[in-house]
Length: 288
Image 1: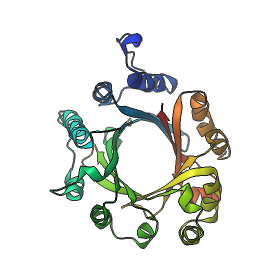
Image 2: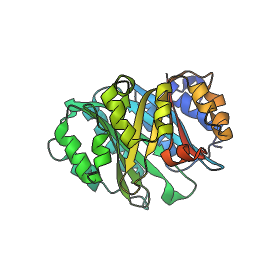
Image 3: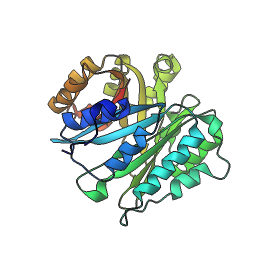
Image 4: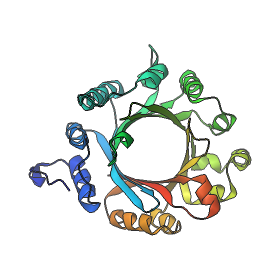
């Protein structure tokens, strides 16, 4: 664990959340955690999201996201500057082709609801990555662009019920990049009978059952995997996570149970939910 030389009383609340997460989960230093922390410290209006990814008996806790609250074009440029600082290391070079293809030459930032960026750092350097997401609204041409880049999928189109789409990009330290699309179904939508009928054709019965305990469901679809990852926004995170019957998830959540958390998201593969044994999942805690 890295011990900071800063006076904790002088560290803003964004860094406090990160430092407390690092201490709780014994986070080691992985490049470029310090650059990310310096970046987060400079942003006034944002939300910090702390995350743990559980894979079988392993926990990956060097995962943090910054959710921006305004000035999206300006913040997008600041994120690019952060990425380029990370690329100052000679063995790091990101592939921007996919995100450039998505943005084109005339991207309209007035159609953006929010942007966020983050880090997912691992012991194996080549497994580390930076992340970037847009939530776009009433921007059908960019929805089509994103689907075209991702690969046209009838399941993907069938899951887009409203006028929103979350578009994400992974920038891996091994030079690989990827696009992920996350259709989101909100509670008022999946309570409609026509959408329930449509979802019944796309999601398993166990996946549908958990909708009644959630305010929203975001379905993650990546290009290299045909399987769905389900990201639930539980109404009662304590009960929801407990009922997954994953001891490691309960240990992680116990730390955050009494913290100042604004929103919790729980993600796992649909196939594991169907088999009744969830061993791989991600927990996200948006701090208030």
